[in-house]
Image 1: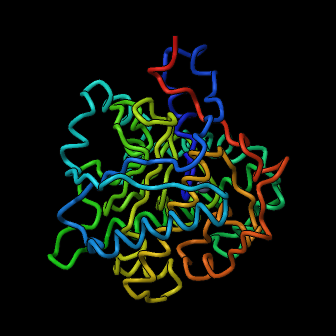
Image 2: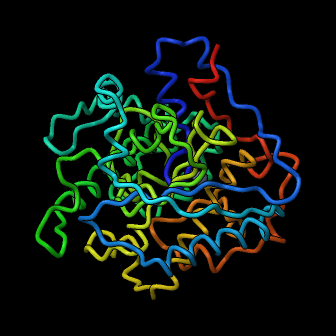
Length: 349
Ligand SMILES: [Zn+2]
């Protein structure tokens, strides 16, 4: 998956699946309908965590609708929002699926994670998109919590892993207003599940959740996710239950959460309710760029909504967008089809 944290859960599935051959197939670029593209929306709620109001959710979706028109020249509309409980959604994963997903999760809650396995995964993950190494280093350098030992994927991986784990442990220690842990022992914070909606063929193109998604896995690392401690703002992932065989997920927690770790990653900026909703709307535009056009990440091109946000600095991120300075391109990350999603399982032979 992609975004805002990672996108290609596909990779996860290709590693885990016994259908190795079939999984090498990638999702073709969808043939989008002429005119208005209708997208089904689910709101997945964890009652323990803070939420956006109905008015904010409406503004989020309206911002996304306008942003897709401005940045991608496409017309979209959303069907009526369907409300689901996070527990109900996670219960749709079978015990066998949960076991498979859990095998890919680095257990930071109990301290039983395998550091050597994690480092190996980091080196593989950081190099897999064949993004320019120097660009990636320039992008993360201001946010690293340890010095970089050289200009190699290995050196970059070491400092990213250190930074990722240090920030994630900060989140683990935060408490909600009611005294409960921000990240408890339920798996709802785990990216593996949110990035594997294909397992349960959730029939929505868009999923908004108030759940904080923050975790570390043995697969699928991306630099922009590591520097923010594994917090995922958004995901685009293959899903055989969705109209274009992929679903875009946006987590509202990073936009409205007021724990110390989140605020620090936002640069200690406070947002109005309206700003938070608009910024989350642009996160959905970004994820829809992955889903509908299979766009990639033009790292460092600040005019582009597809450039990942730095840490959680949403205001700076949005204020620099300029659609005319970041057109759809014939090559590079802004070229439709740049990102390769794995084929959903159901579409395999
Ligand atoms: Zn992305």
